[in-house]
Length: 146
Image 1 (cartoon, rainbow, N blue to C red):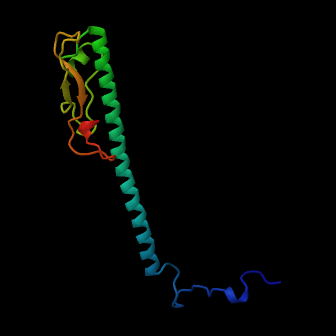
Image 2 (cartoon, rainbow, N blue to C red):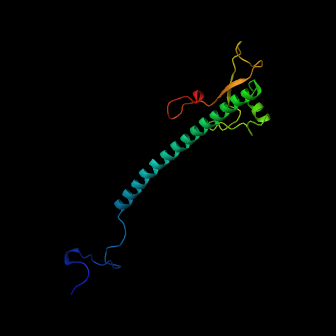
Image 3 (cartoon, rainbow, N blue to C red):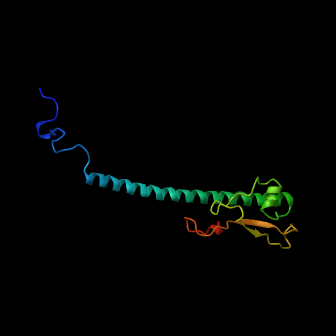
């Protein structure tokens, strides 16, 4: 009884000096390199997009937190904070967060509270905060509109 490959599917052995060598052809190597290049290009694009999405999510969260704390400050003290550092001084925030897009805590744009007769506050202050970053987000909105 024979074991091994059927007669039509046998490969000749690779022997030194037989003119045939074991390995890959140049075409096979080029095809593999091209496939690896295409896959890595797609991965890098998704990675960069993921970083931008993470920064935008952090920006939204930071703005939500600061706006909530401005409202709490107003509810507690009956006036708006004079600036973002007032939130830190009165222990509403540990520190003014960095804008994740500009990577600076100095680029926040504050919106002054509008004083009218129905307002119980007698001192001007900030009622809102926005990002000072230039450009637009992945969803098409400007960072200053967050």
